[in-house]
Length: 208
Image (cartoon, rainbow, N blue to C red; front, side):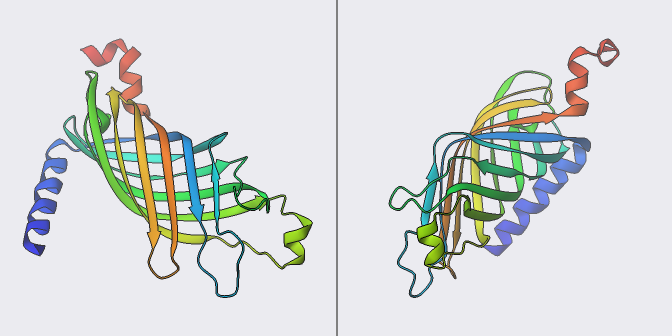
């Protein structure tokens, strides 16, 4: 099994080097739904979860290396859920998450293909999360409620359309932490903007 993984990594890196294009820009996201479950704490009987289906926006920097068929990207985002709330107990409002990931992007989602195509991506990384970001109620303040940032290990899959530096795709990102029993789920839309490739859409010299 380990040998297979090593062979796949070698082939992937060789494929990326053979193209060697580099891009930079940013990524943005809109979670249609997300849910964060805080670490389990002995003696704390309050609801650990908080979710949101409205006003969830994310943005952050992103870089790519590769070619039209496949690319590797690294990204970081700040994702805010302005109306995030616990459905079981109204303790406070707001969620925030900081996913940091590396991804393999195929076909249309590579961002280096000049033709519009469908494509997919897979990736993994870490995510720092916090619930009850603001507006903690007096009732739970009196109980000593304190929400700190907690870590989850995330995996993400995406599928959608890409054209010369721009992509729009649906994503599902799941996070877990076996030590703290925390978990996260983000479902939504993500948009990528590879600036050097975007310039080629309107630059006549790129056709020469």
